Length: 51
Image (cartoon, rainbow, N blue to C red):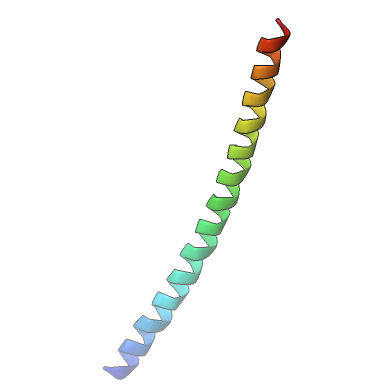
């Protein structure tokens, strides 16, 4: 029984690490997209002012 609990604990640690890494990657992508969106909006504002 104790071995099974240790095994489950190890698997949970592995899953937690994997999820954490994937969340970090998604966070980096969202940061990039947000920055690009802000830059695009700034370009649009400048183009509208130039008219």
